[in-house]
Image 1: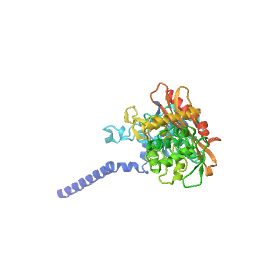
Image 2: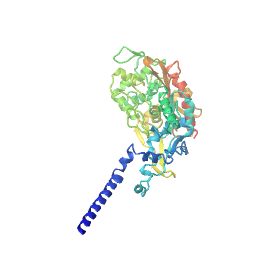
Image 3: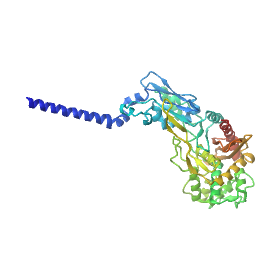
Length: 483
């Protein structure tokens, strides 16, 4: 009898050990996989069972959480939703997250290991959601939003010395709070927003690329100066007028007069297509690719921390296509943020800082868990080249097509641009203006801006950028310098 009792006890012990091993396997080794299983509703209930952390602008929360008393208890709310939607994105119980809500989701939802104390990893208890502190300045954001006034377009403003993004606006915008909860209204809002031909959920500032037109001539000018294709900005070039695109019988037109053999300085100020196209060909494809890469073109890995669409400069093309690409046409495209980076590189003496949108993330109590700061992205051009281009951009505002961006008592540099649009260029043009501004008592420029307005009204190419986009840039620069 004792022998059978011992065997039964051994069998029970073996079963107990097997049970403990399986429990450990499930709770330790398979825990993450089970948490991530879409069929595990507990994860979803836990995610929305506590308030979400906030996105902050100037120290104030522009997001919040509403207690619905439903199983998915807390819904996301937004203060000034359309104003900050290009920054925050949305957090939806049905459609997930976007932009900062997505990039900083682990901190905001309370699942980031950065928020977990040492003992917390043992209990696997979800921590209160932390906050994401942005670099956005409310006054600058509002100036850009008011300037676009609902027109299709975008504004990006950065601090040249640091890379801090001061404004990121896309228009028309939308109310992200309409997507927060569940039910028929949310599904209807999602369908309506996606069907809207104006694409309000498209972040035009970082996710849409446009032909940059004449605003791109700053990049070509930097390439020509760095490559030695131009050594004296005031010396005549060898560019004929009319200029025939290499290998073709197509004549490249100018909107300005006096472009035949014009100097680089004159070509930038009045925006001669022929001179800049000729210089791009003279620098050559390899030289232009090297130059545009230093500004950030063709970079597929740029994050701010949200992903930024690649700004394009073709790697394979003939001389005629290179000529057009060098004046911001053909297949050359850029996001507004990319063109703000071009202006910032000039303003910062040739050193391009990496743009960033989140300053730091914190616990719910405000303790910093991750800090982000200035770092060099690339040396976009030689310092001497940047100095020359600064003066040329000042001349554009003081003597050329950028007069509408002038601010009394402030040093302002700019470049207008108009890009052709539509099949056969029959659409209204895209109006561009890139600029930077330096207060009279400042040692360096405090802001760089890029503005694009779609379907701009204009009779003459560069007047569009000067008329439609420059006044917006002026308002944004004034707000940034006002502190």
